[in-house]
Length: 170
Length: 384
Image (cartoon, rainbow over all chains, first blue to last red; front, side, top):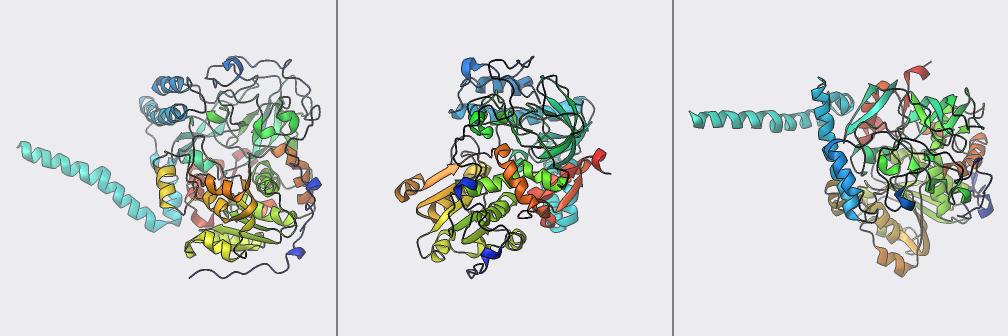
């Protein structure tokens, strides 16, 4: 059954109703609002120092494909995912190759992350990383159902296949 | 320091990382006092945003105390308690000089179509975010805003993104007195879009979602009408019926890439990723707005392309406005609204989670457990 319409009857009593009704009261109107010299910047783009040690890719749509004066360096590219990212950055932001390449690199990067963990002697605690304690606490039914499905796929099926193969070999 | 560490879709953990350093004279280092998990962080968490790299610390909504400033910083000093807008903006490019801080051209080397955002993938500049004990804040004289002494920091932290984004959503709808405004999405941004629509003089505010506890919340908090689209045969027809068959004056998409409501959109946008997310809310917004009306988009989509009825938009003569929020430009107005008690942002916070339990926070928010609306993270150093 479709819901009934229950309009708010006394909306003019809502605190603050209409205080910004005038367009002149709204900070983002007009869209382009010149405030040069009042942004807090006490520099110009031309005299801004350049941050050093850029070790990532730049969009080929940037002027001269050069880095910005200030940049992030959270996770520099590396490994196979880095090579795929390098390939992706040969294409412009208007290209599907650019974005699909980056998404693919992200998936490869996840596997690299797991293997780095293992090589450094750390076994990822997937239960904890996925926050499944909260699922167990607040959504028990779903937790047990999904655990059963995962158990079936990752334990029961492989073990059955191994046992079957061994039986055949004998 | 402790920091959240992205390991891949649906996997995050807290690890010890090196404390950030000043890398540029205009940088500051901020010790985080509160940070949030944002609905748009879930797009990263679900693996939808290209160039989201393992090892990155997410989080673009945070407050903190300035610990150190670079040699060129003039407007901040150690000890200042600041809220930090999610945008990183240079303050001197042509876009910043026109108050389009979200579209800054000198902070993101890796994309030109996107501005720079803390902890939001390398597509948004490759900066670490605020779900940590410390953060490097570039262009520290531009973004950070000193929190007034009277303001609760939990109100302040929501002024870094959610509140301004909801407000800008309403603003981009060019709402006039008496307008009927439909907001798609009863998440934190949708809640503040609905609240802001009243501030702009709307005559009716209707929120559409499919999560009952969120609809109940928005109905009380934003004093609006709230309806569950799962109870409707067709949300577009439902909305036409309630607007004299003409459609709403303004429709706001506050959902973005992970909308429910269409199996085709979910399959192609979320599962197969052949389009940049499920654009169901936008599709409904275009089809529910009246001819000559306004559609405002703040829901986040990926960078490729989406299935939207652009032909209908053309034939109906709709005006569509969209952007990431230029937080800095909205802060003076919104601080005033908090002071006048027109807005009490912290009332939407449902969960306060220790930073060490960030993975539980993400899962709870993502799966909408325990009536979660807005989870915030508290670092150990800010516990007392």
